[in-house]
Image (cartoon, rainbow, N blue to C red):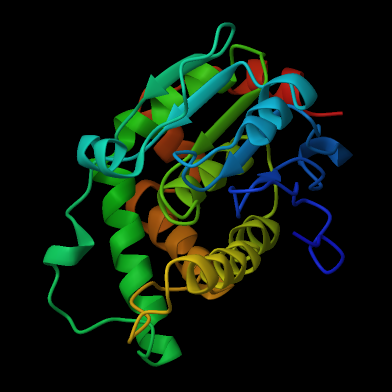
Length: 247
């Protein structure tokens, strides 16, 4: 795959389409989020040997966090068992979107998509708080980590937003990191259309920055701030995490 037009955060792989480093953003105290330590991606169930070499040997990943439901692991596959890489399954609990009959799909007007995503995301932060907390705990171990779900945008985006909030990254940049998944979505769709056939209708939603900004606003209304939410779910290693991940 060509990487010429991809934002610099992306890392090219054969069958991972939304793989990127979450480092590089401006953070608290005039520092920056360290690169080469925390990565996010879409499903790893199709990884090739070259992809495995990239993740394990070149990026040095030692922990893989899978945020999906058990059925998704069974259907789509999971990261293979590899010596030196610890696999963590932290299902980020939520009401299945497929069961929500609001007629939201890839053809829905932008403002309705943003509202739908804000409602889903704030609910997921509450229902799935244990997965958010446990993911932060693994990241605080200090070893290189990759976390992912299916498309690498919704559940993965929520964990990324929580982490970047802990590190003191501005909300606008958190939303910009979230919106980068648009590139991964396009890459996946192009591969899918070429290898699996193009679907009659596009069901998946994109990642408009407004959806994350409104989610962060909603979480502040519910908890006082994202920092207060992170404290409420039982994560108390903020200073340790900042020491490890800020330059």
